[in-house]
Image 1 (cartoon, rainbow, N blue to C red):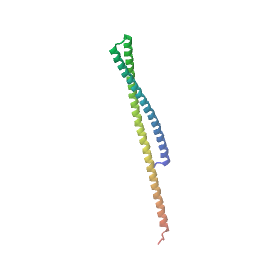
Image 2 (image 1 turned 135 degrees about the horizontal axis):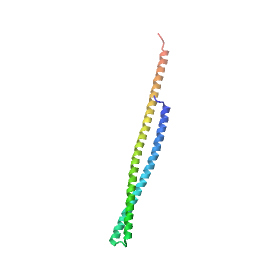
Image 3 (image 1 turned 30 degrees about the horizontal axis):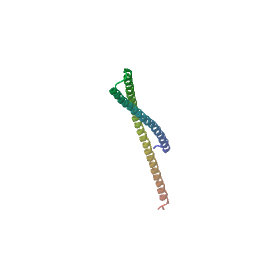
Image 4 (image 1 turned 135 degrees about the vertical axis):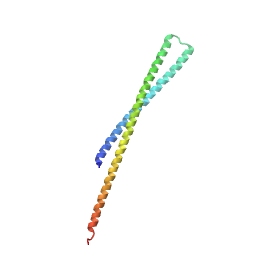
Length: 146
């Protein structure tokens, strides 16, 4: 059967691995939330620009250059939004991957804990059996012989 000290060392390694993955998971989660905020800001800017453009169209543009600037800026915002959405997609995939790794690390720690508990239980059971065997021997050796 496995040695308790070996299992304790293995348990420490698994816990350390779990803590590392948790730290990476938190970093990715923070980054994901920040990128979502950036996407919301870009979308809000695009909405405001669209409203400004509609307002300008009703009043009329002062020159063609101003209209060109609006369309160029709108195109730039759309490209930025698409780029940000792609980045969010990649971060979400990475987030899901780390989440799966974290769940696996939790499972590994739990398995090692259960195995360690089983080894301790078996050792205690074996020690109790051995002690009972010795007590039986002592008792039988003290009985008078006929």
